[in-house]
Image (cartoon, rainbow, N blue to C red; front, side, top):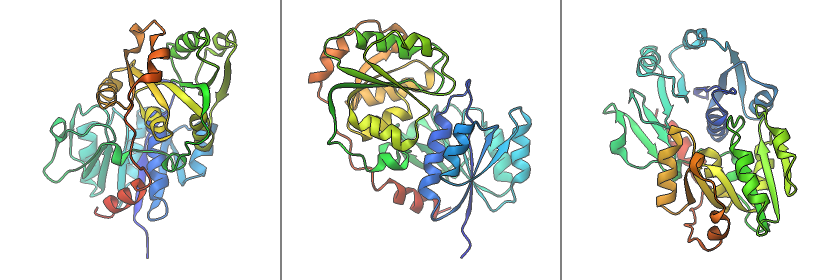
Length: 317
């Protein structure tokens, strides 16, 4: 029996970041055994290529604005298209629907109207926040967490006392990494720190000044999971990496430094999944290091059912 084709469309770069790419590829990995998956992304780096080759076929698109029409021209009308980025407007969604494709949108901001058949937001749970068509299905909350395969069955039994994990994405323009590493490095409560950076991080020299850190770069999903599972605590932005750390049983201090993270930060802290740091630009003291020890964290449920949940959802299209 011929498998339905699913085209994943997400980009990554120093300006865009890597979150859209990583979580869309995680979804492709969940679906690849039941669907014919292809990933489309602009001028992928060696790191992106190595990650995509583990999951599915891929095709490179131009890095200029012609990428939008180039992708549309590839559609035959029988595909399921998955879009993940802020620049996919309602008008662009309609162009895909006009091709008679089924459409899935991964949403962070709920800042536009969606004509998609499915909208995914793996943190927010309030359906009233979303402007959608009457036929649109909403896949909301952590039961639809876009986790990479290693994080679906994490190990909790190898935590190292006083060990912290810090990661602010592949770019981290404002060097939040060094800001929080400095706070951790000076605390006697902190014994060791794993810092994960990406290939667009430009401040590595600033990290070499600290004594307790081990710097890791461009980790695979398996490597990232191993590092998170040995960490007792973590400092992270409220993004997909935070969901991965929740799955690994870390006690997390988290906040936001871009607009699309603010709602996630508020929701995760209100539900006690993370210790709240608020606006990370404005946070300058080390009280979280001692207070996090006795914070009453909510424990997340079992994530192992997520792939089957997505397979069933996509088979409805």
